[in-house]
Image 1: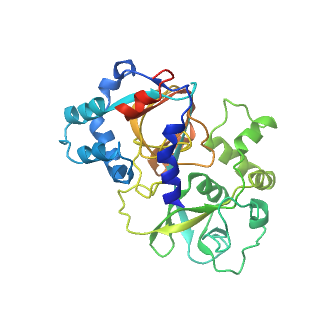
Image 2: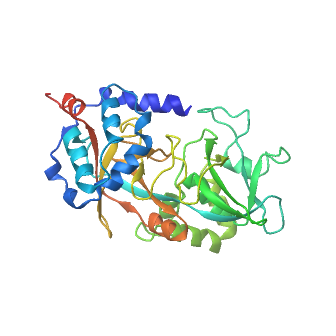
Image 3: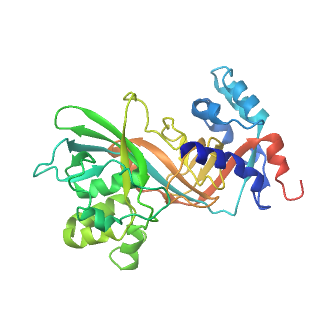
Length: 339
């Protein structure tokens, strides 16, 4: 499945609409102030997966660039051109890798399971919805990876798609996305706003957590209004300093990896993020992940890292701006409206 997704993502640039616009690096705010070496190192982690002819020589050169800022910036400026696809403003959100508490067996405290992918699940085919699964349709099948101590954190783990679980026996296990039940994601934050429980300005991941915990019965019903349900797999061979596995099958990097819609932005492509908001961000990242709620050419989810601080930062992000791809020069100019 991942190989097919990657192949489709790499082919999509040839189908781009005439709304694409080639820009100059000098027009990108704070381009000259960014850490281009950090961006290059993130790009190098997945570049070997880009097997189209115009990417192959670029990736060969990427592997041999001197490990200094000047060489990294020159690499991007000589071989790429910025391309704006679609009509800003963009919508930027953030995600992270939570650290949760878990048990290998169910107890009074640890009563909320996360499941392995059921063998009969088929990608893109609607299966049982969240409410049905929460009522226990999978009980007794031995699909539990771990039992968590907080249903709200279990729900948010589904949204993030990966996490670390500190087990009662001292182990720390890493889990990652293994599939979903075929239902589209529905934002419970939007429901809270629509029903008048909080304003758009009050909305954040933390405010949603607080509301659900303060209203447990209504909160459980609210969570089930999102019919999407995510299944997990245990990730092995990851060191503590490595990020979770993204859609390209490699570890992602805080503030250098971003989730995109691969129908518009090919996976593995460098992207320039211009995020507005309370804490503006102008930074070169790499499109190395996807997400069920990430749709459109000007939509991106920025990976903020691991743990509570990263989660608090990511949960506050819902900002406008621009998302700009860096494409090989020939490809960039071939998609101009009159090019």
